[in-house]
Image (cartoon, rainbow, N blue to C red; front, side, top):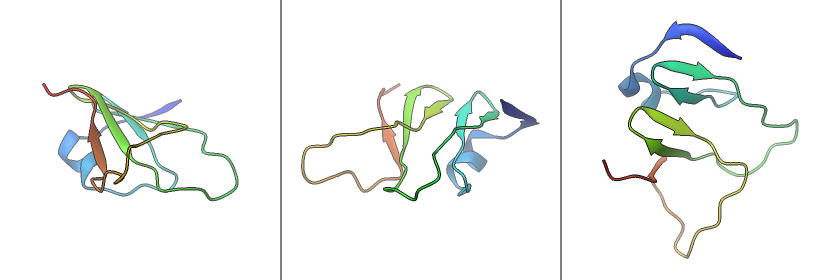
Amino acid sequence: MGTSILVSEQEYLTTSYKPEYEYDEGVLLDRHVGEQPHGTAQRIRIAPRKYRIPDVSVYKEPAPRDRVIRWMTS
């Protein structure tokens, strides 16, 4: 369930949330992250104004350093 407050994309990208939220066209979406701490969550841009946090990510070395990974280029 997401919050009802609209957040700009710029605000979402420059804010750290604990727990981390996903973003869908201005709406912050709750995401169950479990109870044990784990790796750094990176946001993935799946479409314009849509960001998700994957459960599992596999990268070819070196791992991306950006907080946001661009899945799409548009």
